[in-house]
Image (tube, rainbow, N blue to C red; front, top):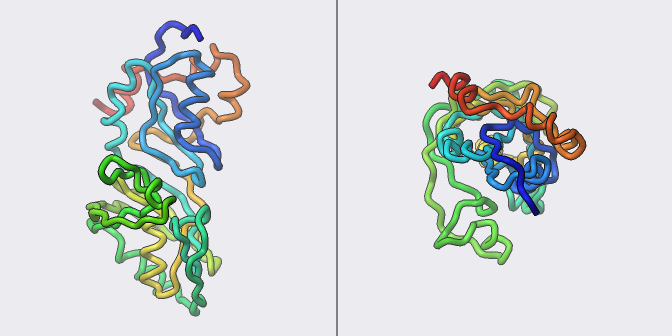
Amino acid sequence: MKFAESIDGVLCVDKASGMTSHDVVGIVRKALNTKKVGHCGTLDPLATGLLLITIGRGTKIQDLLMSEDKEYAGTMKLGETTDSQDSDGEIVETKPVPELSAAQIDAAFAKFHGDFYQMPPMVSAIKKDGVPLYKLARQGKTVEREPRFVHVYAHQILDLRLPEIDFRVVCSKGFYVRTYAFDIGTELGCGAHLRALRRTKSGRFTVDGAITVDELKTLPREQIQERVMSLPDVSRLRGA
């Protein structure tokens, strides 16, 4: 396959559910006919929303972009715990959901605000002795993980439809929203898992106006290339 001339920059993609971040990289590579493509901050297959795709020399600022804060909108379901902490996993425990007041739910969320430690889930891309944890989990193995120091800058309960809770959270890099749901469920005494998740912001980048996966598959290459943000534009957006 002959690759086109160099394209350098960042493309904001609205990832669809049911695909991996790596799948999106492959789609962009094919759509733009260019080889050097990466992504900033893995989104689980369940999740939708903003995935920053770096292209050409844009891959050199990948770590910089990944280090920025993220904003998510999600839905957790109380009363069911899964082995992956989200709805893609198998249910491992069910508990009745008590009559919870808004104040009790507020207090549980407030426990996970500011600085705290999170235990990364076994079904994650973190590596142990060079092997991703999710591969070990598939083999039925559980290994010791190091807790991660994380920060929640802001949170908001958007809707209570028990057993489901819609919420918004603004958090530091390396934050697991499914672990957040799991921990809040534990705090409430009935368990929980993440049922839906959408990344809405990453640093100064927003999902509003991001190119969709369907557009990547159907639009002409020239129109997709027009949506790639140049490196000077990225620098200006970030205030760098």
